[in-house]
Image (tube, rainbow, N blue to C red; front, side, top):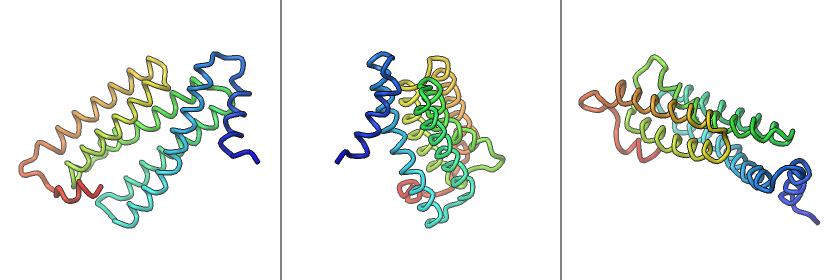
Length: 171
């Protein structure tokens, strides 16, 4: 009996059969990355609902946008549109969190927000370098830098910093 992973791999090989070998490998890697995101975003949403951190609605919305963007990217990938899927999955990881910082409230836990943004940004930029076009990767880098500057200007320049390091380590 064939495993589901083998079925997916064979389907990707059939879709990208006429393209270069690297495209098949890239598509397989994108499926794995997408599966991790599709699996972890619901877990993240449940954790947020359980812990009830400040502005948990914004967190749920951000995770839902990442999840939907990843789902659309997987759909495009299985349609044979590797470049569009790569741009979409990279954008879905980087953009929502950085634009969430622009909401009109100052983060209650700015250190936790900054750490989350930094780690999520690194993952997103690695995805952009691997899957996205150069233009999209460069644009996502600029968005990430702007988001880091924004969180510093709006949340981390306040003395004393609100929030706790215990919250930061729990998120």
